[in-house]
Length: 144
Image 1 (spheres, rainbow, N blue to C red):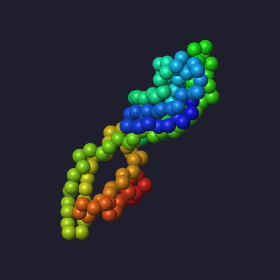
Image 2: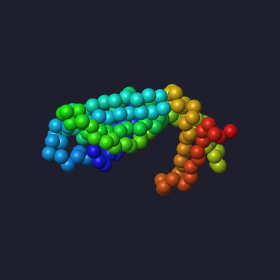
Image 3: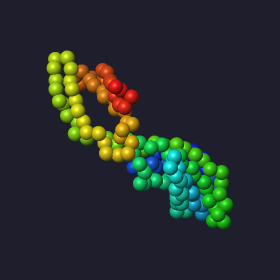
Image 4: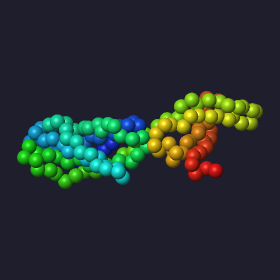
């Protein structure tokens, strides 16, 4: 396996794809995908000839290590190729404008309901009119 890369991510999924080995038997190969984080390891196998895989049931905002090995019909495995991916954090909900003056806006939102929400930081970006972003503000648990 070469060119292993993260194809896309959501709050609960990571998808990887790779280039298959230049081997005449490659259509007979399956691929072993191992997913680890700080709390455990899960392993999956693909169908023959598959060169992409989606891991589901993951937790939001967590970094995962993914490795892929080629597996021959005789169960011989190649050296692993590795990539890291982080699932998206859960989004805020109920974003609303609480107060506005000629010089400021006050907004409010509901925090996500997931185990990592207490450590999320929030990037608030604002514009003046219809142009590109004119400023941003980062807030979160490190702010007092």
